[in-house]
Image 1 (cartoon, each protein chain N blue to C red):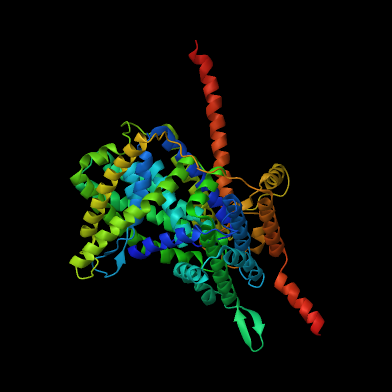
Image 2 (tube, rainbow over the protein chains, first blue to last red):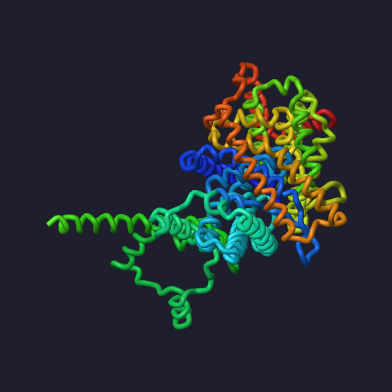
Length: 344
Length: 270
């Protein structure tokens, strides 16, 4: 089920389109550089294969309903992340144009949800470490199931956030999440099992395909760039999104102060150095108490949790970026200090 | 996902409709793509509860359908088929938003129903616009337009290949599905293991086919670049078409035309 145009706003659609366009450009460049001409018809035909395979329904044992293949993980296993992303994007484009399965504006969101998460997140982080190098039946099954579940959960979360930020549907965050995530957990397990079934079949029939179809990577430590990128994304997610889930209960210090004095913060004296410093802090703090200045006025009885507040996200993200800048500056300064010593 | 045989038929029908020769079909594909994009962005940018302001936008799909000889029944059926997702999400709005927004005599219509209707209207228009684009332009021409507008060539080549081999693979897959249903009394097979070997066989044949295709292309002089066989040229009136319609969309977005007309009529009557 792909997102429809009717449920997103131009801002959300445009942003996701920008992200998708960037990814398509990046993947195209990678495919042109890394792969030889042979891959071009291979990508096209595999795209058609995924399309056709999606139409072969199978019964899910125990439930009586039928399901079909998604395809992101199989493509990633056979082609590698960049080519798989392009192939999946083309399949989704054809579905949007011919079958009206997801609108043109929502195509950017759909390509991102169904393509980016399986190919660029679930495959390198989950499948490759488990079953990339040492190919073995159990490893394939475990790797496929875990990566499919992971990729689909992220994709479902993406749909929830895109709908939420568009503001057209009235569904509240908590209800939507509780609806989407369990369903996609089940779908993910089935997708993982189906992917595993196909990959195991291919591995048993023609094992050289799994080894040579993807360009071999050198074993060794992951590149520094990827580690940094991963940490940056984690910091952005933590600052931007998880900060909403911060507990509204007072922290240890505030709790003990309130128990002993009846207030949450001690009042400092109104004159002298304290007052001057307090005034300075108030002037420089452009995100007081981790939120926007105006929103604090409407703080009515009981904050909602999760406190979905763009002010908190912004402060989380800005705080992360500022900390990063300060750390980089410290690193640069320390390096400068070391150099003259090393040259002696 | 639609059934295999109907997919085959569907893509073929769309291709046939797009090969007609009308005024709309002869326009440069880039103009049609850009106008459709402006249309969709304008429609989608309306607020949750706007209905009357959306209605005049129907003039663009109507214009294309009439001048482009697109079969309306077929179009509407495809839109209906694609509706479930939007309906499923949108149906929560009347349940969640019960504040009465509009009073029609003794009946009070809640904001939830208004936004649900808005969602349905938006959905029909955006989906219709995308389908009409393909029906009046053709897949190949849209891909050429995308390439001229800056989409990376690797992706455009991928789109073209996908379309080309879709028919071949859907044909093979439909033979497999028919064989399976004949051997299992119309059942969908013994579940995942049978599917695994079906898809696995299809995949192996696909890979072999890809290798044969590549060799065939090499022996015909393929060097990695695909060149369009007739150059695309934008003529003056086509630019006017794009600018005119875009201006109209922006105007209709900023001013509520039905309300204006309604006030005029009320002014005359009373």
